[in-house]
Length: 468
Image 1 (tube, rainbow, N blue to C red):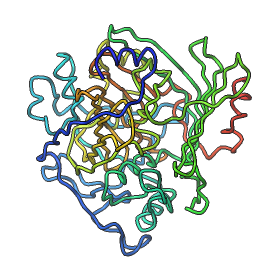
Image 2 (spheres, rainbow, N blue to C red; image 1 turned 180 degrees about the horizontal axis):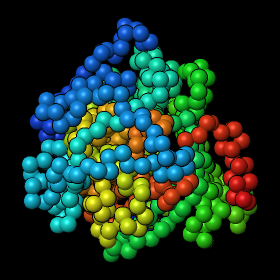
Image 3 (cartoon, rainbow, N blue to C red; image 1 turned 90 degrees about the vertical axis):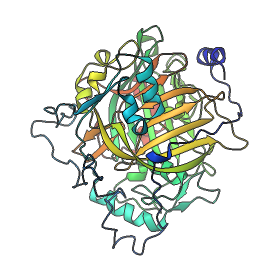
Image 4 (cartoon, rainbow, N blue to C red; image 1 turned 90 degrees about the horizontal axis):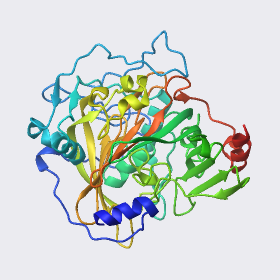
């Protein structure tokens, strides 16, 4: 896809196409492949002592820059109240060093291609690297389900590209042997049982103009993580979200509802839209594949939510192994700042972001035979302690680096969990970027709740909630 084609895609919506892909080798020195048996002797008893409850390496690295995991960070600040932004527990720390264009060569094997491109292009861009804190943790019930899933999870009859069967309540593959297993761990990673949030999307154009394109109230459930869930009771959908627009004024009251299936060969993606002027609910685009995100002015596709979201069936995923990399982590301080103060004319404010050294799984995605996608090649970097993607590089059909997705990783000791949080998606060819899933400034912030009644996430709820 050439430059003019990409510009037209942003203005008119992208056309899906099959494209050839040139293979580019991942630096072998940066990756050590970790293989493991597909089953363990006792799914609810003997758990390998060298692994954390989610399947990460418990030990630190050789030089001590990645410490051993010691239970995560679960201490809730005594002054914090649910609904408020969570405080930064590391507010007094100073960076150990900064990565800039002048020294990026020393860290080239610890950075994604997108970060290296930003450093090369913008003299003021830097990455402040802090001491590493392995803060991720999960509730005991989730840890127990992961042990059970380790010996029971399996592909759906159509194959793993289409879904996961016989798993619930925890990531399905704590000792992955394939790229698809890692990607399903990402898709089914733990965010809590349900949430209520106020979110916004900003687009920063190539000219540096900042535009608030949407704000909305979200209600979301993770049926896959409902209390007491089992594979027999989990149901066909692992995620449901309802969004009611509050800004800009022209979109006030618009509603969107999406349900994400565990088996996309058996159960279709389901989505609905409500426009107050029409006063009726219509089918809408699902949160999947390369449909342009209407809130992002074409800078982002719907499957770039949460770095990667929706069906994985359009790609062949290759597990390249594990690497020690510099990644965004424990960025609670970012959530205490005003949105517009974060958004520079070319990139996010480097002073607002915290980076640490962590181990990540590296997965290469290439277009599957007979499938189409505007990004025929992508590379994902999945944090070992949360199974959530922290970065993604995307290339166009001409082999040019096109998109760079960048999570922030938000610490929630009360849940406990570390989640992707707000994210940036940069267009490396045409310029500009998106700041999406931006949590509300102040309260109510990201609130983890018990599961909602099914009626709260039904198509009819779009009408009743929009009227409010």
